[in-house]
Length: 531
Image (cartoon, rainbow, N blue to C red; front, side, top):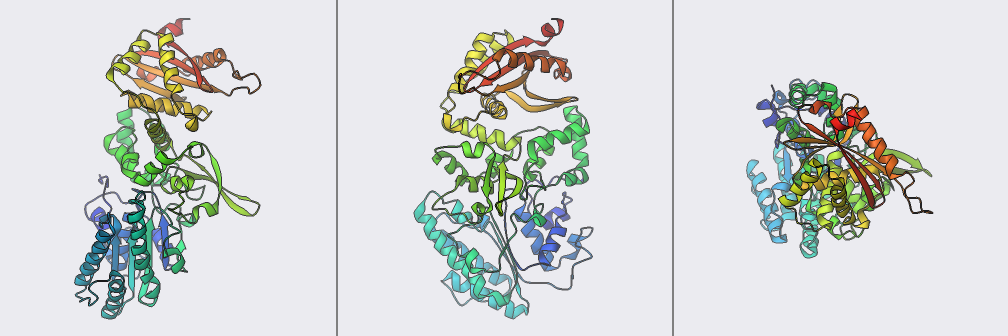
């Protein structure tokens, strides 16, 4: 069985060491045959570096690595090109001096690989130009330039304006070299998270093709639904056996947790990092937030006065994504580019392209709400509080359980409060997870999904959430609490969400929300059945 490529972004290593490789060479072939200078924005840990590595091996003509892949019998393997591959994730950039030194060291290293002596010893801009020209002259081949995470020295210093501005000036001069050396260059591919207005890259390279929102390349990173079934079938079978659910239910749950990323509103892909971690650990969890979230996003969260725009569906013009200005941060733009919002629909309004943006999946929604709760609520998370809630549930002490839930809901700031059922479900899952409970959202059964499962050693809680808007004239819920609780409890019993936990005591909890108020009802499922 092929191995899971967790953390592996080197194409040759994947192929030579029996790791799974999801074939992206059809997209690569189409890209190379339709242009020469490209930019691609994708979130971190989404496969950009592997894509760059694949391009490098392709232009080097390493034919044996591509056997069995789409491009194998379509590429001219006799043509080999010199490569300049600059990865800013591996370059020091915490100060302008570090960045200059790091770039100079990189240029020296590439020069040594081609046995070139660079006479421009100090100025990194002149040395970059000299390197490109000399490689071209020595090999009699035009150069392929691959730049990965081009914007990292900016994003990682977004809160320090002095370092940011100095780094920006350095990179602006450095990238300007690409325009002046165009006749020596065969192909340019640049990746990053954001498309910065303050960089000369996008104004200098007049023919640069930004394929970020191009539907032909919507699946160039990430795993499609078909990729999942074709390449990971043994791991899907292992996971379904671990969860004791069907193959179809396993796919459906993976869709809910990790699918949904789209850059054209039609084609969807899974988060590759989270999907691989799921297959390795065999449990659903929020794998991506801690490793894939740039500091910039956290700082935007902390600085923002209102989060409502990113917590609900929003329609924006295409122009909002064209350029990102770090002197005037647009929360919607950075949330989209960082992967916390995705395109769910593309539409034309008054002859102008608009996009509808929403959370891509449960992992993102739950992680983000969890973080918003941590940012906005000061709460001592103790074992005592968890034990207290367990006690209320076991004793079916609805009065005190309801009081505890109301106290939590009251502490949610108005600026992140949204009157939607999914919102209440998500914030309570985030809160209970933070307290140390083992919970599942939208847990699959043979006839549907239950809103929440909470597992303890001695019992399992099956919870169903219901929501009503407030009538603005009467200031009371449109649906009564009594009706909502009755409907929720009936749904738990009728759909028998508890059946797969028949070896434990089952407690059913109905929770009804309206505005910032709620009511609850607790029953032990055996008692409920005999009524």
